Amino acid sequence: MDYRISRTGEALSGPSGIVDLMDDLGAALSGAAGKGMRMLGGGNPGHIPAIQAVWRRRLREIVADEPLCDRMLANYDGPAGSPKFRAAVAECLQAEYGWPIGPENIAVTCGGQTAFFFLFTLLAGEMAKGPRRRILLPLMPEYIGYADQGLEPDTFKSLRPRIEQLSEHSFKYHIDFDALEIGDDVGAVCVSRPTNPTGNVLSDEEVSRLAQLAEDRGVPLLIDNAYGEPFPGAVFEPIRPMWRPGMVMTFSLSKLGLPGTRTAVVLAEEPLVRRIRSMTGVVGLANNNIGQAIVEPLLAEGQLLELCRNEIRPYYQGKSQSAQQIVAEEFGTDFPYLVHRSEGAFFLWLWFPELPIATQELYERLKARGVLIVPGEYFFYGLQGADDWAHRRQCVRITFSQSEETVRSGIAVMADELRRLHAQRG
Ligand SMILES: Cc1ncc(COP(=O)(O)O)c(C=O)c1O
Image (cartoon, rainbow, N blue to C red; front, side):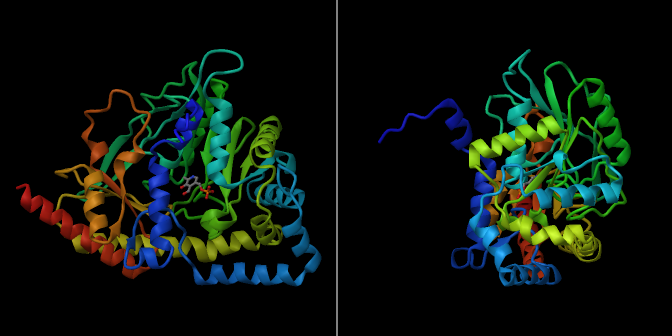
């Protein structure tokens, strides 16, 4: 049949970077089909033995507790999430940071991805009252998964970063506050912290400056803590997260090692929480109960944050250091490359300032040699008048969450391919 597709349908089912990325990830990690593929793409969490053991233990405890197990499998939750889990999240954040919040400030969603779809749909586009609004992303490159979530064209308005070269082979992006203007067309400001893809962690000072600018304009600042504090805590710099009414925070169980449970939470003022709850009800009736049941007692008893500090953070910090070491060994000192300072998350962001081809082509060449990376172009969107900005075609993202063997052999193939390319193109 020749299906006629709505405009919204086209926006949500057309070509998409995040769908390609998740297809690659699913194929590479699904056993036989991905055999031999070195997976340096995707954002899958590493399988940390001590953490996997906790999840298996919790599942055994749940199965042994028949009433709990039956409730978990056989009952729908209310659309805002389980009251016990919401209370445990609020208490954990209140105890850790002193934020004035309760369960009424917490809505569970089916992953952070869904949370952002709901938030962007609420805060941008044609407004029920007043002119059309957009989401301001103050620091490009930014998470690829937001890029196709706008139901209307030009949902995002993004800013180029200020680039600081830290040493011959390292650099860091900063928000260009001189260029940052929150006009009447902005419905919310959004950042991931740590930033996917770069591993940048906005400083406390940058966050409080953004929060003040957003508050002055009466729009929310959305902070995506998918890799952040306090859980999973893949942050290698000392930070102190802030929240105050008007800000929206998201936290996810995925990067704790539970992406299969599709569970995240939104922390916001109550009216926004009630809207998120309604959207869950309309779109999906309820959330998945399983992640909430697994994690709730660990949150309530304070063990989750200990696991994050003692297992998860050191694991990823060690992986980051080892991946940086491998990059330095494989590329040597003479090859033109820079690595973004690794301050958190699971990725290294590599910049090849003399790259002779587009990173999409580099991706295809590496895929043919059994290595998956993510081309950097995908992470630069919503930029106006930046077509001639060569930097956006010179970066790639690799993940260091997989085994050291995978990371080492993937980086070795990439370095070899890049050297060949440079040699061919003179
Ligand atoms: C920055 C960022 N935000 C949100 C998400 C969504 O994750 P999930 O829907 O699994 O919570 C991801 C996933 O990789 C991410 O990297």
